[in-house]
Image: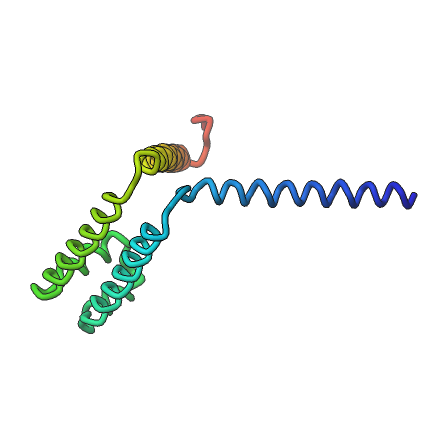
Length: 163
């Protein structure tokens, strides 16, 4: 009986170890391989620039703009449209300057990429697009099913159409 318990524990430990290893390999597969220190530094600079720009931009928000952000009655799209409509010329100029600075860092990063790294980026981009298309298809199917369900139950509640 003790040997059976030991074997069970060994198999369970092996299973857990393999699943953890597989998750780690999947996570590593999502990251770009063979990145140099200079490239990592450029990526970190880009992240920091985006973070500081976002904080500086949010600091310019008026009370009205903050109220728009906190309005739970609006959908995400409505909130975004209302906020963009309320931007001042200075805020729009700040956004454009932030975009230009990030674009410049991206170009610097792209200039350092090897052909192999460019290929990896293309593959990641394709995989993301495929996943996104799959998610969009899934969402449209869900919407269609909801619509069909609502249409069927919208009448007298009898799905068979009889009396």
